[in-house]
Image (cartoon, rainbow, N blue to C red; front, side):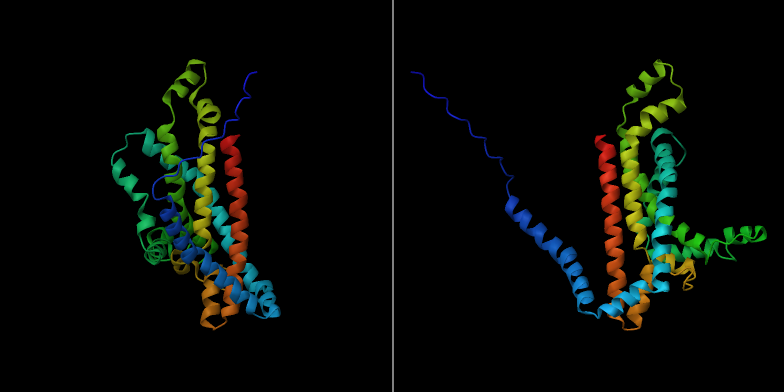
Length: 279
């Protein structure tokens, strides 16, 4: 009689050295810096009077601030996508004079304090600024309007698009473009049918990161916005106003509303980006 075959057991997956220590440190850091503050925020809202929370969230001033913050952030992300793609494409594909300088300039919004960038934008686009004074004869205003809010948010969100798309352009094989050209495709067709589908997931991911950054932006917006209630007042500024009024429950309620809405939007966009990547 032949012996019955012995069922093979899957070998355990080996763990890297120090896995337990690194996991513990990561859990402590994430818990202290992310989870605990979020729990504290929810606790403040839970302890507040429900009627007061609903009054704050349902007030016209809060709804207008929400609309401006999310609407301007979405518009800034949409505008940053083609602008960032064009900048990344130029920096990678063309030998322009001063390319390294312009490549480093892309990261300036990361390093510059947001208040400094807000003051600089106001000086440029204000009524007495270089660009603002040139637009005044045309009856156009940027500073202290909603257009100024969008401009400031583009300034802080654009680098995310550039830095996300740039590595994908650098790694894209030139042989694929040459193959498309050999089959008779012109440059526009090659970009639209061959290159852009490969860039689209990274472009959406960069725009999503820019959108997430723009939602909570305060320093670069507060100077150029004008901060007129019901017109150019963003939600982060309204949180600060509530804190100055010692209405901590109201400030926490507005912050929680932003957290829930932005989290839901980011989950939807990230799932969309994953679908494009695997599609």
